[in-house]
Length: 377
Image 1 (tube, helix red, strand yellow):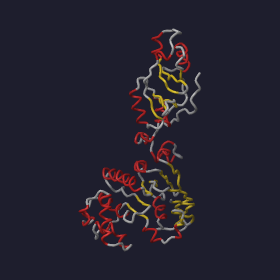
Image 2: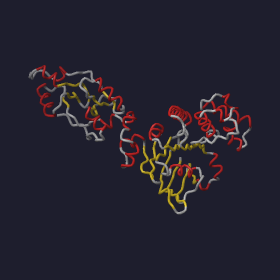
Image 3: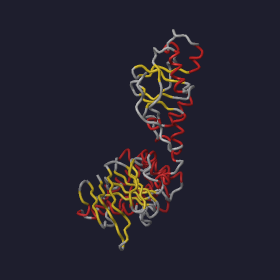
Image 4: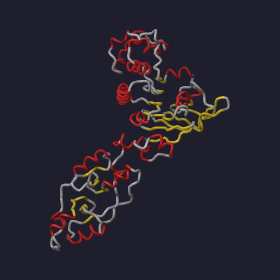
C-alpha cells in the first residue's frame, strides 16, 4: 500500500536519509525505531508531504504522492503526535470535528461521527463539551486518536504518541491501539524509541541508524537474528526474557537425536543409549512417536533378550507442537520427569526434541543443532 523507493533527504547540503526502501502492506502495524536524530520522524513527514525528498519517490496505492494535492493527501491520512496537539480553546467535540469542518461536512453528521469516535476510544460521550484542560494526559491522547480517525483514513501516522505518558497509562493505550487495529484494520506507521513498545505493537519493525535502515523485519526475526552489533545492542541482551512468547519451539528444538524401535530388544536399546550417552530416548515407528524409555527402566529388566522395548516403554508422554512458544516448553519441561519433551506435528510424527541444553543455547545465544532427524537404525 505504501512504498518508499530510494528516498534520500538533505538539508543545506547535509544528508539525513540515505537510500531508504520500505514497503508497508495494507492493514499492517509498523514501527520505525531508532535513537534520537536517526531519521524516524523525517520518514513520517515525507509520507504525508510535510517535507519533500531530495531524491526518490513514495507511492500510496501505486500513486506517486508528489503528483497529489498535498492538502488533500494530508486530510486523507490520520496523524497523531506526541504532544497531542489539541486546540485548547476548542471543546473535545470541536477538536475531533476540526477536519470534518474543513471538509464542510454537515454539523449534525459531524457530531454523530464525534460521538461514535468517543465511544470507539472509550471516552464517555459527556466529554463532548469539555475542554482539553479538563482531561488527563491519557484522555487527551485518546481524543488525538479519535481526531485522526475522523475522516476514516486508510493510513494512520503516529509519532511517539505515548512517550510522555506514565507507564500504566501508556500500556493501557498500547492495548487499546491493538484492539482498535483489530477492529479497523488501518495501515499504521508508529514512531517510537522504545523497543518494548515496538515489539508489542508491530507486525514489522524498521530499525534506523544515522539515516539508514539497518533491519526491517518481524519482531521475532529481529530478536532471533539481529542484523549487526547495533541491532543486538539496541534490542538488549535480556530481551529474550521480556518476550519469551516470541520464541517458538521450532527455533530451539534439536533435530538430531537417537531413537529406538518398539521391536528392538532391551539389550540393543541399552547399547544405543550407551553409544549416545543418553539417559532417555524416544521410541519411534515410521517417524511416529509411540513412547519413550529411560536407562533406569532398562536396568530394572536385566539383560533378557526376550523383552522388547514396546513391552516396557512409557506410552503417555508430554509433547510440544513446533509452533508453541518458549513459555509452553518451559512449563512442559517442568512437568516432564525426564526433562526432555518431544516435538511432534498434528499426525504425531516426531520432528525434534527440546532439552535443557537447547534452552541454554537460546539463553546464551548459541544456535541449537540443525539438520534432519536421523533415519532409524
